Image (cartoon, rainbow, N blue to C red):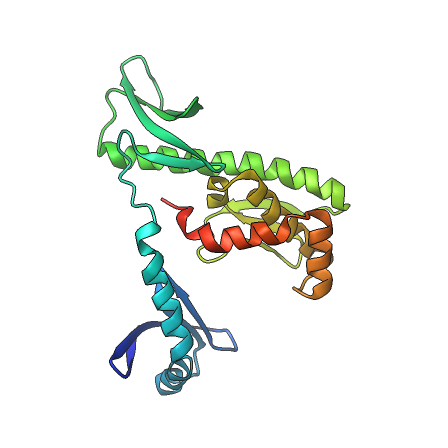
Length: 241
């Protein structure tokens, strides 16, 4: 449900999503704009008042997203475009051949190569997008699983599962049952950033909050923790396509 409030000469558009939750939450993102998650019993007038009370914070967030919009890649999945894999740029090369029976994606030197059958149907860019996205997700699962296994042994913890998926507004999470969820787009970041994220979520197996004890433990395992955290906050918006 679309709504808006006006603050001076500023207009804040927001979407209301009602569910069985017990509290009201406001999120601001580049993709979804301002979203208010609220209990079903809360009226729109009360929600409007809460949005108004949070207006300064919301406008600051919206201003930030507007300032970084130009830095976000808008790839069309055509020959020659650049893709990030573990912090390194690879130029896209598309090969269509009658000798290719099924699509494949490989990294070779400085290229991300998509091999396609010559008789592929539909939009070429849509096909390339699909195969590249699938490849990124699979590669993320391979690398992240490897790094989780490495650090889990070092930290003496055992995650109950590893799930690589598209997380809309976060990079990772650790469930109450110790399943680690990781955003597949982290595979675009340098390996030390991947490791930082892995250590962060594994630390939550032992400490479920973000207390000083949590940060001290994470930093004891990964001394470059603060620098990596700062890098991800400053550059995370660029890790997309």
